[in-house]
Amino acid sequence: MMNSMIKLTMSLGFVAMATQQASAQQNRKCAPREAVVERLATTYGESRQSVGLGERGVMIETFASANTGTWTITVTTPNGQTCLVASGQSWEELAEALPPQGNDA
View (tube, rainbow, N blue to C red):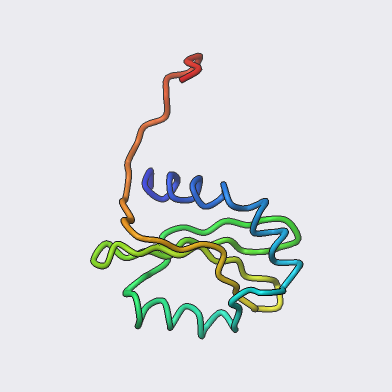
């Protein structure tokens, strides 16, 4: 559960950028969600690691593979169109604890 929360927090860091990009569909790699999810699974071995909702009902998802180390962040609009926001290498699953209450760390 904690891992999911951490991954969700990481993904939500991109919400503002992803929401802006979702409304301006120029120069982006977009396709129906089913096609994107299938391609991430078959080509990179990635599966969904976290999900969150952004402005205007967009869904932000993080896909990753522990085997290949690749990761991808997507944004899906309410009409089912999924666009790639960011991707990279060296995915690591973290289980970091929150700092104690009252600690500014």
